[in-house]
Image (tube, rainbow, N blue to C red; front, side, top):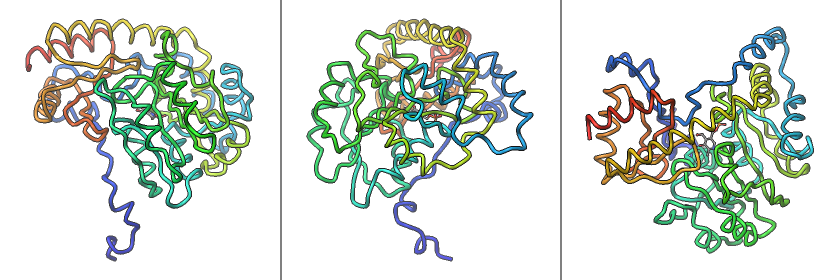
Length: 365
Ligand SMILES: Cc1ncc(COP(=O)(O)O)c(C=O)c1O
């Protein structure tokens, strides 16, 4: 069969996702003395020790289908965020929620607006559904450009996607800028606020919590993959009006997330001490990394997330550094797929991992 003739053009146009190297691949290829995986914005401290026990216990029910409405977890999320449980939808990670949002909100011919340098997962999910994405260039400080975004809204705009803080830049929209955005997005256009890095940013004085400015057209996404350290489980949630959640729920795969994932998230969200330690580690190591970059005269972007963007002279230097660092056992993420081919994203790891990063970079720079 000629797939080029038989498949929709939007699928043929998509570039397959190229994942970063796994630790096992790097060990096999380069045989470094140690490996530091600083490529995927995971929590390098792992996850709450309470997760293991909860997951093992959940295995007693593994022959049964999962709770399709994640009742216990949804209640806990609602309580913590001071919303109604019917305003919460739990699914297999923010990526799944983005897929749901793209399948439910858009009619043919309607487009989304976002930044040109933002989470690649949104570009992919929109692409699978054949949705045009209008990409507004980030400012020269790598920030989401509110005025330019508002300027691109027209009758075919269905949604605006804002990652706040953003990935891969770590930059965030301040309270004033966010207020301007929500004041100027018409009430019949959805605003998808992806707060994957919320836990790292929430105490910053100037960071707007989307849930403090609730409107009928705002959908907030959160994940357990980052500060909670559960990326391998695939679980996240959306908060929106009850009516909208009911519509989004129709497109969720009935039994996602799995029973162990629900149990893991419930244990993780209840362990505030582990969360505090994770956030503090990132804060401390980020400050040290900024000083290091300054001493090396490497340009970087101030970050409210658990990663920092290195801005290199050109694409070739970004490729060279990523490759050379890999040989030293440090896995980094070049962010060409996110729209910034001359940049590298460094996930903040433990002190030991960050020292490995710094020593290796000194060797090759
Ligand atoms: C902004 C943003 N949204 C969503 C995700 C995906 O999260 P999840 O693991 O919940 O699918 C990421 C992961 O890198 C991200 O950076």
